[in-house]
Length: 111
Length: 136
Image 1 (tube, helix red, strand yellow):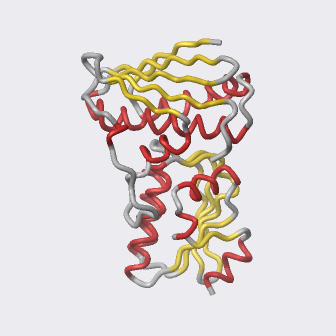
Image 2 (cartoon, chains in turn brown, green):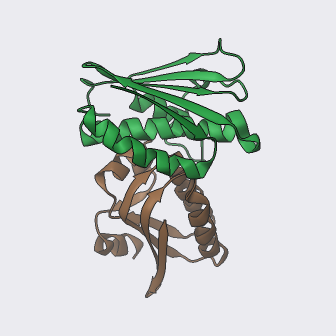
């Protein structure tokens, strides 16, 4: 799993590449924890290059969302591949997360 | 078509196993979506063994794959602690806490999930996907 972290204005952007599973989730969790500790208010996670997610990956995002909500932060997941979006939908997490079709949409959701 | 696999119970092996299974599932005639569902369900079952049946102790996992015109079958055998995942109640969705979705996904993604607790030690789980099943 490649994690490319950049800042764009007041938005912290994480672009992930690879497969998010029980093995790779801890690394992502650690990176996201840093953003939570710094209480970063606006985070977008770009999943364009993520072809696979399992329940460990979902749990990592749920944990991040919960923690960000506590300090008034906003999290948007962007550019989900159909296979990945489908897993969110089965778990009904598409009703919990802000899912954006593009980074432009994500920026609007975070405005 | 039939094939047997033996894996070590560790998280790193899961990705390698996925890569090994993808071409095999393609040969069964399942479409990409259904193959992805089988792959995810199987991985969730294996993750469950790594985390709960064996934990830090480690151990072997045997996976038997077979298919015919009607269905794709996986039997997963481990030798760890007893755990009947079919008895775990479904979570209330959407979950507002991390975790607790793996077993739910297995049940949703496969057409039949049966547990055989008669083997000792360990567990035997059967996962079946019908080739005619509608997408989840």
